[in-house]
Amino acid sequence: GQSQAKLSLQPGTPQLTINKHIYGNFAEHLGKCIYGGFYVGENNTKIPHTNGVRNDVVAALKKLKIPNLRWPGGCFADTYHWKDGIGPKDKRPAIVNRWWGGVTEDNSFGTHDFLNMCELIGTEPYLAANVGSGTVAELTDWVQYVNFDGVSPMSKLRAENGREKPWKVKFWGVGNEAWGCGGNMKPEHYANIYRQYATFMADSPGQPLYKIASGASSSDYNWTEVLMRDIPHNMVSGLALHHYSVIDWNKKGPATGFSEETYFRTMKSALFMEELITKHTAIMDKYDPQKRVDLIVDEWGGWYDVEPGTNPGFLYQQNTMRDAMIAGATLNIFHKHCDRVRMANLAQSINVLQAVILTNEEKMILTPTYHVLEMYNVHQDATLLPLELQTVDYTFGTDKLPAISASASKDKNGVIHISLVNIDPKKAQDITLTLDGKATAVTGRILASATMTDHNTFENPEKIKPAAFKGAQLKGNNLQVKLPACSVVVLELK
Ligand code: AHR
Image 1 (cartoon, protein in one colour):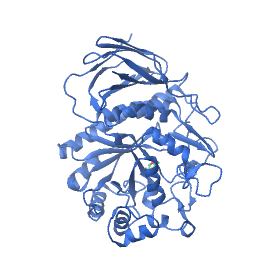
Image 2 (cartoon, rainbow, N blue to C red):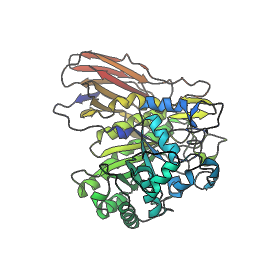
Image 3 (spheres, helix red, strand yellow):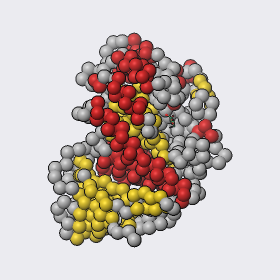
Image 4 (tube, rainbow, N blue to C red):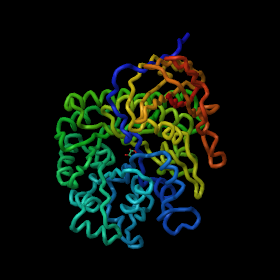
């Protein structure tokens, strides 16, 4: 028999802030993420838009409070030549998107389109630069084009293309997956390349660039070791890490209608993030005990087979309660490690992998993942309240995982939020939560559905959405919570 799960808020003065940038998104030129997702073209008469960017998407992402958006890739970034995407649209060259379906990319969505869209959404751009097939000069020109506030060849060109003021982009990725689609480099080679590129990326006065090195794939600890050893720490702000929740790269399984075994294995892969962050952090601590270099999980999420009948190169997948579990548990892991993990990007925003939004022509739906990120956004820039968690097991066959994941924070108004996830698809959990002092009121929201394969569709877009949560009772210093199977809850304590 299993005992109850217990949670207690630790006494003492909390020190750490959950950086809002942990809630970043990612938009690649891949399938229908940009074209049809974010962007439908200036001449579209069927779908309401602002300069070609869908109004429904802008409103949804504003409500989500996405703090940053990574673009244009992914693997696409290391094939992208930014000068192809500026100036009159009818003069822009068409290229082949070789990684993603071999489709023709007409470059109608480029630097201005992206950076102006970020202003519309109210999010900070994170540009991923081409290192694999680009040049140092091309990148220094890009930095000058978007950031330079004086007289220069690139700021002149920018003004000619309709933008006088620079956008002042802070976040820059120096290549992507340099160990793979970004050039199949060895870490020693990439470390040198990084040093070379970073040398010529000019800071703006008063605003140093935040440069992110292409990081490890999952458990490639040697990659992190070599980069921390070989790149001077004053040349790098963050090291990336990519990890997808995937059960088998050759047999990923469907996004819907999966078995409990598949579900269990997906969750095991998702929860592996805890070990990954712990081990990469230990290596970083060895070289950088003062934690100057951040760990940036700039690609994470569930990766399944594409929906039947769709282009295999477009990575279009549905999004179920399983994805809600991945999102809730992963964000709790990021919070716990917020002393090192200061930014992250869910892959990807629209119509690709673990999307927050799916579109079909003029229709748009919000996924369970969207709702989790929206419920959780109360944690953005809040103070982490360390928790002690005695969880119970979710067992499947002879294997087991912790059933509960949790985190707590206090916002700038003194309001405490506690996010709880129960990944057990069959069993509700009783949780006793011991507070550090008394609270006077508790309210909450829950995301749950009858089965773990449930999802929203264009026909039934609101099957899964947050509802008021009535399962928490306050008794002095204790909170008694009944957490339904396969649910995400966010409590608010005053
Ligand atoms: O997100 C899809 C792809 O996954 C990205 O382009 C690449 O960086 C990763 O392999």
